[in-house]
Amino acid sequence: MGFQRKKMPPSSPRINRKRFKGSWGNKPLMRIKSRKAKGRRLQNFVRDKILKTFKHLKKEDVQVALMSETGPDIKLSRIAKRLVPLQFECKNQEKMRTVYDFYKQAKRHGSLEPVVCMKQNSREPLIVIGFDYFFELIQ
Image 1: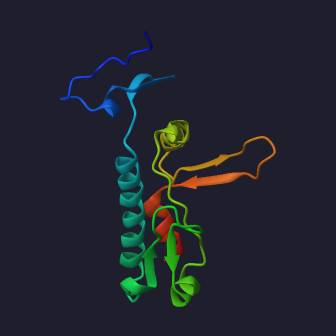
Image 2: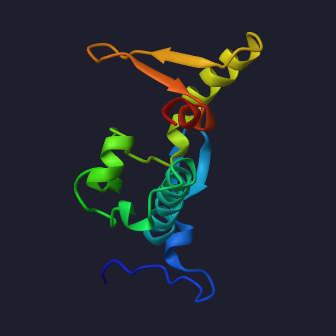
């Protein structure tokens, strides 16, 4: 007599039955394929915004990095780097909920553009601004 695994019904894949406990309660784990697709959507969104902001750039000037490729998520050509001297790292995660709460609080303070300045111990301060406002600034 050994340990026997409990058989699961064929209609429900095993991955959907797994759960993790966090501060939000029990949630189903996200499939790796779904996680990568979610990140890719954000990368494509940023690429399209850069191309829309700088109309004279071509698609070849602004490329999305392949998944698990080292370096920035948005690959810029030499011409694009002159116009946009920035490196983009795209994160599409629920963990950043607190940052969005800070931004929402800054928005409530008045009619000016909200800016969040944040700092973690032993780290450099960071500034968070709205996506569209950022592209207005660099245009």
